[in-house]
Image (cartoon, rainbow, N blue to C red; front, side, top):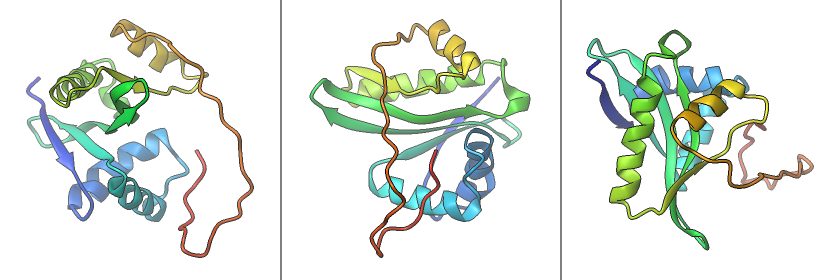
Length: 157
């Protein structure tokens, strides 16, 4: 399958038409307005959306990722990776992850990291099959919903 990998940024029609609907399958709390607010803020923080398109122009998968300098070395952090439900188990997600790996190497990263929800067994199988290891626990502390007036409201994930 000839896939075309395309970076999609704020203001591009494909962000709302292609990226947002796929992200909504993974993050149902992100309606169109919340996704647009999230995408704009996250882009300013370095987030890049890379979309995988088939030869017919259909968006089959999307990954949101960024390069971070950390005390553990430079890494690519994958915020989200989602394949359209009808395109799963066709190799698209693996090809997208391979593209991210190539980009991470070119960016001088020492590894790719991501979080996967503890209940998402299918994703765990996918990542394990691609030789990714569980190397840490990710802890979270929910905070009260108090925000400063200039901070936009984004949905909790």
